[in-house]
Image (cartoon, rainbow, N blue to C red):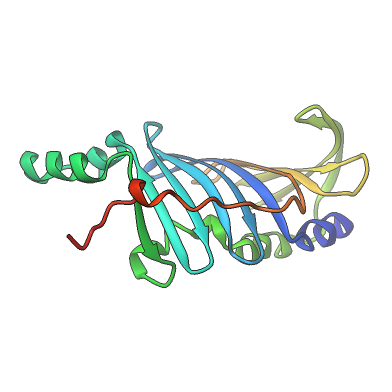
Length: 200
């Protein structure tokens, strides 16, 4: 387990796929993220609305679809919501990574922070036997913390990367898949015509 932790937490970039059930509903995320902070990905909340995120340097671009915008504007006057949808839906908004409102949006861009979660893992994990993750042979380990049971699948071929972590029995069950270790993250800045000017 130590070897897998060392190998996985030593990467410069990776792709993370998360499927989690929270008190606010289901959250699904798919992000390619790097130690430098550049990242690109999508997040689906409540199983319907989707947000796309691109971060390069200190600039963050987000694009929300109509479903998510309407979901987030529940309770507001219809005319205001319709106007916001017309202006923002399907277009990129630009913000600074340092802005408080942007913090939640870019949590998957903080690779250091994400990898820190793994470092907290101790060696109480027990070997369960062979399994496969995305068609690759892996070794399954399990660990129990209170009511929660974690399964950790480590690559059995090549470098011993952690390929999947799943937790069940806790308040927020989740499955997280890791892939594309050390594959450079390329973030394309949206075209100027696709960015909405919120100052206007």
